[in-house]
Length: 364
Image (tube, rainbow, N blue to C red; front, side, top):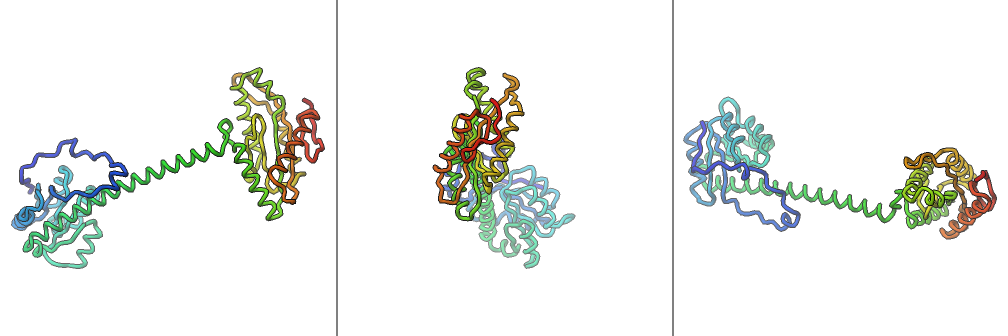
């Protein structure tokens, strides 16, 4: 059996739709409005008890109610899914399907509806089961029927709490979204301030900062460290012959070529123009020399393929500086590596120079 009283119109599709999530300032400043208009479903197989509960709810005048009634679980489920409800008063014992089974189904379908279980006698174990099943409150029928204000207050408080939970959920969702956006912006800001726009590797300022950190670590733990400055040979000719767009692509591809030969613990940045800085951690000058010659030969024998220009053959010159455990500064190491790079260029390019000695020279 189902019944609708008070003659309120059915909610329209627009009114039943979920409201747009509030902004964070709105939610923070929000004071929930008093529960003044409620749509409540009464589920009880006893008709006289439903009448008494209806009278109890409407007697105090604290809120305006639109009441629906059902004598069984099947009717309750139909009404609950076809109407937008604020609360359900559910008898603990129902024919065909008991109240807890009905409560379980309703709770899974109607997350925003406050559900209160009503029973004919006090039973603490039953109350615990009802609350675990999703009930907002557990009421003794004789108590609420003899004290109408108790029933009405319990319904309003349950609905109020449910609305608070819903708004809290929206607030948490908004906070999560704002935090994710903030994290994204922070990552973007870090990338903009620490990496080179063209190549995506560390920029000059940050790679020198990392060099200073690695020098301090090497000094503290007596670990070897090597610094390499690499400059592409005759790069200006590529820009002059093919244009700067092709030159930019070449820098990107050469940078990836260099990076693929490094270990995870090594560091790489664009030092300026066509010049790269490599920081080889825990590496002696001898090991750095072997590595740089391998990298030099690999670049020399591997054409750089650019769609607009076909295969381009490049070489590079390398200048190496090794940390000497004498409180050497960033400026000292960069100066030494730069001097050795200058010697590599002066001695014919396409070679590696360490300690002012040319090694592995090629022809270019």
